[in-house]
Image (cartoon, rainbow, N blue to C red; front, side, top):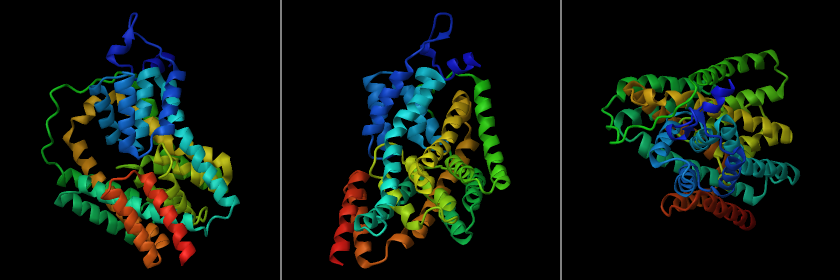
Length: 414
């Protein structure tokens, strides 16, 4: 097993001394990813730009072709794409320990900031503060921007737009935790029939090859499947275990997020708001705060865990929501070359991506809009924030700051 772990995801140019893998420093991976975790504002697309500048241009840990192929893989998989790219680079650089180091470094700053925000929220009784209401309105604008941009790229023809609208209608009509899962599954089937258009030819260069242990990869995928099946069963057997319930909810949400980090919003909302663990207002305030910190949006789970059960559950929720991403990267990377060229896989994925646009559109109305926008002033501030993000192309944290200041002004002058 140690040889399997060491060889996982080592590329062609990283083998020497009789096919023994080069051993790079795990500490080096940790420190570089920590730097990125402190500075990477702006969401997943911006994160990939930071990664390219640091890992490809400055440090030359991989070439352009391998980086582009790794990004293509992580866009294909469910989960947080930028975090998965970081994990993949960590694996290529220093094996499984490198993947864990890359995840810890990139995730730790935002996880700590959001857990601390949850602690402040509870201790200072900020629920009615004007700037907290501004964060809720910022969440409306940010999700509206996500729906707008994702719709233009993922549902921009008649078949996919139809799938998106059907998914939105389905989850609005059927208020059940399984609604999103069923919508995604049906959209994959619809995509097989409706989205089998001719795909662009591959670039002139052959895809980069990612070597690795297929035995370890199969084990990772088996662990993912086992946890998806066993966690709900254990939750039924131990209904009083809050930690198990939080782990199950976050793990399942992290397994089903196609199309970007914003899609985790409706999945997590179904897990934590109906049981009464957090209120809709607390949920939206945390989501707004998550836009203002660097690093991956999935650390919103750190905030939710802290709100539910303090620092221990913050750690548990953070591990649970990122664990599927780690298992998927470890499990799919060695098989990626074979999978990426299959037209049926691409067609199903197009249907899934269209469905998540619809799911996010439904979430934009309920609970986001219905919980936050209550007055003409609220609508005006939301519209202005949306304009800053979409027309002026400002980064999300500036929109959050603008909305927080606007919320404070509304509270003072209303």
